[in-house]
Image 1 (cartoon, rainbow, N blue to C red):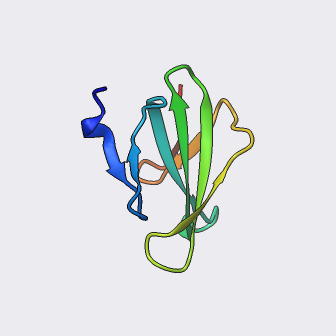
Image 2 (cartoon, rainbow, N blue to C red; image 1 turned 90 degrees about the vertical axis):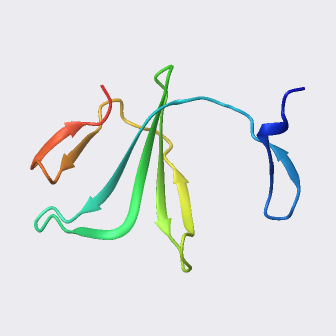
Image 3 (cartoon, rainbow, N blue to C red; image 1 turned 180 degrees about the vertical axis):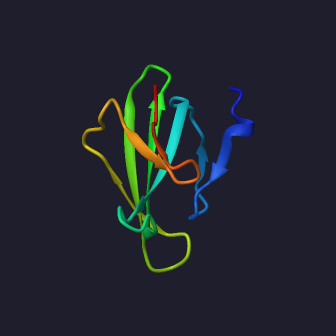
Length: 96
């Protein structure tokens, strides 16, 4: 089996094989105050769209300690999502 380059080790030292599931597009959004447009928290959301069009959303909430997050998956993701582009002062559709 050609798995030598896919082998990795867990934090406990257990050998594992990285296995491909799917690929596609992603978009990352942060949350801002609607009046000041300043970032309100360090939380962010990543939306994934697979090649077959399935959408998934994951909210990342920071925990104590650098680089640690609580990740919550959305139960349902709208087909048409909009986000604000602060540099261009306009809204865009995340995926078309």
